[in-house]
Image 1: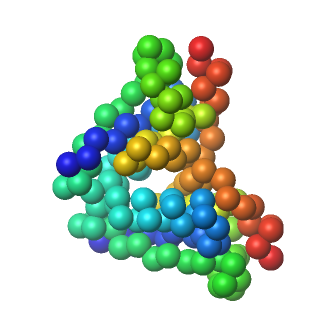
Image 2: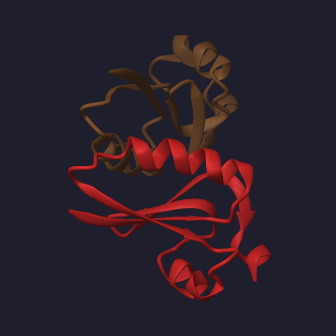
Length: 77
Length: 77
């Protein structure tokens, strides 16, 4: 079981991506943590260190994947 | 079982996204077709109609999700 983190900021684009992607991932292989960066600003540095530049983004096996484009991380500070 | 289409163009960004995402999706729920738009230009119109603007992109349950940014569809014509 691999831990995966989905970062979002509550915008409609993020919510749609969250619902689609989180439920589409193989539950046998991935455990998904959903982090709302607008509410959990203390997770911004960690997201940035994982290579996240905008939300929504999924960090999968240590690699950042930016899904569509909602907001840049700097807009959340 | 839902059919999902992953569009890419063979670039390194696409290949990485393909490997990660296609193998991360729940195999109980999704059957993934991988389409190389650089080689299958006859699928460009279909991709565009699904809302795809750039590759790599995944059309999941009829909705387009653009993953990172490799190339715009117009660069593939």
